[in-house]
Length: 316
Image (tube, rainbow, N blue to C red):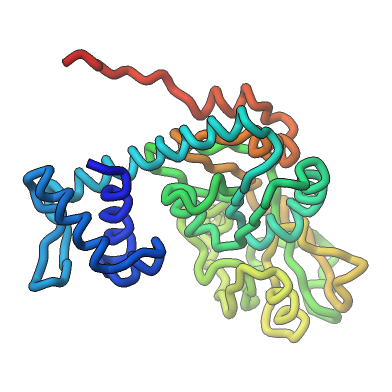
């Protein structure tokens, strides 16, 4: 059995059983992949894939277990390589961070600048995505860790570290009726207007939905959703609706013809989180990045959350 064979089988699975796409992804030939998977199946004496003619159409029951195990093996191989690199060179390598547009644009600017200055030889990639896929990117190994808000980490392989609280504001254009109120905004005020915000609907688990549900007030209608706060501001400015956004995104010196109304009194605070795989080996500069983002998160603190004792019986 060869690691290459496991890698080929796993990539075919990841490419929805398309051998051609797997070959392209791995920079090798389609016949070579098919041959190596056949040799692996012959050695294991069980089929990994169900075939219809020459085409792979499904994964067998034992194949699912084999692929799950192969995934763990290849991750550990990668960890071994990272450990070797860590001791050989502390300041070079790659770091991929998945995050939301808001975090990338407003929370990470100073962190990234300080990190790049400290580690100029590290290739840093910031991947802005929606909150819904952050966990998956970490789980699939597409990111070293993720930074987001209101993340629902339910996978046993993932660990979530809570950082700092934040709350929301309503933004409105010039001459909006809400500006004429001589009192703090109430939920009823917000529900009267169409809303432009991050999600196409307010998830039941969100702080916003909870506040409206508790007050027995109908949720406002969302007329436009975007992960990009600049898009939200543009359409609020055009009069499409009022914006419900993280307070930090409003910039008085730049956001002309917009006004910010704090609504922190209406909603419970949310928290920024860091999500990592429990079995990942994080390079030293990865810990440094997290410490720049959240100074209370020392390497010792992060490792205490990540690494649990392994209880295995190796007797045979």
